[in-house]
Image 1 (cartoon, rainbow, N blue to C red):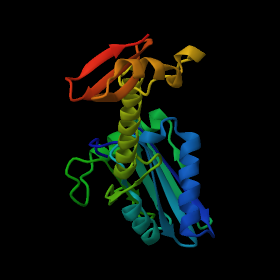
Image 2: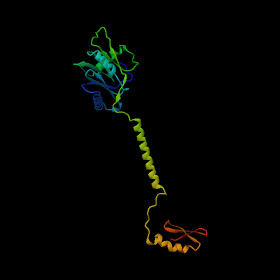
Image 3: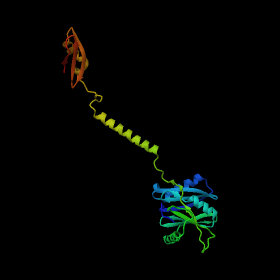
Image 4: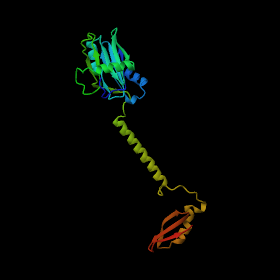
Length: 248
């Protein structure tokens, strides 16, 4: 039954009288409940008669057997479908117009796998995993099986992060990093806005006029009065060269 790209677990179920979106929602929910790692889990649905046949894979490349399986079941409703599921085989039959089935025990699965390995597929499979449908009219002396290939891409239960979302996350992280870095640089920068300092009455600007008037003459004037490093500095400009007088 092939071994290339084989899922470790394959399951099937049938939903009757539902819409496609409901079948997809149920299959996804069922897969999330029954399979441990939803990131490696796939699901698909396909219309069959009065409902939808759903398929769930754990692991593997995420390729569905449903297109071929539904075609063969519809053509051979009394047949038996055998699909590889890791080291076991999933058997699917039709009873009262509904597909039903389950995993065969390991011993029975091994026996079926050995029998199927001796039969050539009816269509090319290129070394990939495949299943078979045994039509109801098969006799013991003339075994003619219908091959079921895994062809259609399935849906991933836990969708990977989309490119736009990933880029947005990277952009947010980069912006947060720049904001944090900028805040740190501002905090440690010597050019931050100076913190207010408590001055006594004698240190107020208007109390410095006497010292400023005493430092100038008729040909110059006070160009700057600055409080720095705990004292006032008076800068004088005019016809005489610039001078600086420290007050206190």
